[in-house]
Amino acid sequence: MAWDTEGTKRKILNAAATEFAASGPDGTTIERIAKLAGVNKERVYNYFGSKQGLFSHVLADQLATAAIEIPANPTANDIGEFAGRLYDYRRKHPELARLLLWEGLTFGAEVPGEQSRGDYYGRSTSALSDSQAAGQVDPALPADLLHFLVLSVAGYWAVLPQVARMITGADTDDAAEDKRRRAGVVEAARRLVLLAQ
Image 1 (spheres, one colour):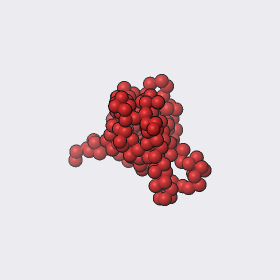
Image 2: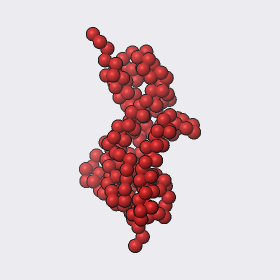
Image 3: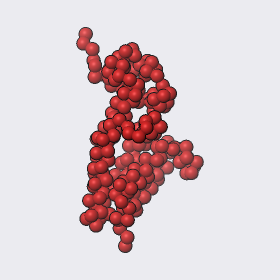
Image 4: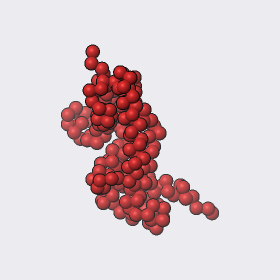
């Protein structure tokens, strides 16, 4: 019987995403990841090298999936819906926010894959800059700061759900509250780019 290498890698990546999101790279072990994936730890090392290497692969995999679902092309006309799609994605995949937080706590200056990820983010910043140059987006804030603010408005709900609960008095599983939060994200993003009248 042939070994399903890609299937095994997928099981490892899924198990590692769960473990890393919950405990971070320093708080889990290859043994726990292998056990959750149903493989021996040598397979993990063979496919991904070190634990840091596996963490980098997991984050790259998660970000690649997000990039497919949320193309990096916000424009003045759809900045609100761009932020809404970011909110929806982070709501459905809170592990991505946790992985990004762990990355910030674990790595020093430069993170693995920083150049390609920077290029992805750069496309969104360029789209906003182009909209500013065309007079469609308020130029009061530089495009890079505006881009980061939109990401923050859309994503912070997944980063600090306990603070969101304390402020709003509602849990993340409250459908009406989720709809209200999303509408707030969309409106806030639109107002960030609104030209002064």
